[in-house]
Length: 264
Image 1 (cartoon, rainbow, N blue to C red):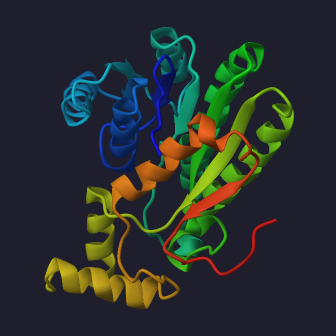
Image 2: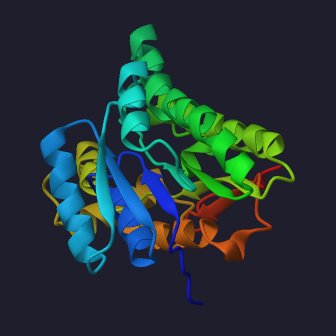
């Protein structure tokens, strides 16, 4: 399958590293003009260089702004006034005893993981509908439907993204714009490596630590390993393409078989 996104503009939020950077690279390889987003000028500039190089000289630019704030969102919208493909990848995660998560932390997770996506959908979706083509993809997680005891606040935000995706898909019905969420299982990034170490300790070699984490904390995984960021990116690039024109309002999985429940 040859995916050609030439002439399309994409914004990938939280794309200076990890899954977001892999998605930005995949979209650029497919020919899209890609805007990389992060909070700091230096990190965004570095990520732009990396994505451009890894995509073979793709058309890559930067959009600096903290999307958890209205001011940051306004800065990103000024840098990228219109997009054809919006990938809401920005997110934070971390383990915490459920009864010790205070109001401020609940709000912080909602602002970063949910409201940042809603702000951009409100801004970009009308233009997509007017042009008769567009893709909105919200990065959810297996934690959306199998809430982990150590990350209830994170799981709550990812469940919210499923509702956000379904609702905006209904708003865009019949316009040529699709809105979907991608349920990603535990993925091998620097942040997840730190998270795994936090839970299983620093004494084991990485391969053993990864295996212990999956067996103890994510036992439903059929892969029994972490997913690589590029594996998430492959699915996102497909969903952003014309080939996925009949897929909307869905929660599409690349979760390693972790979730057994059937989503509505």
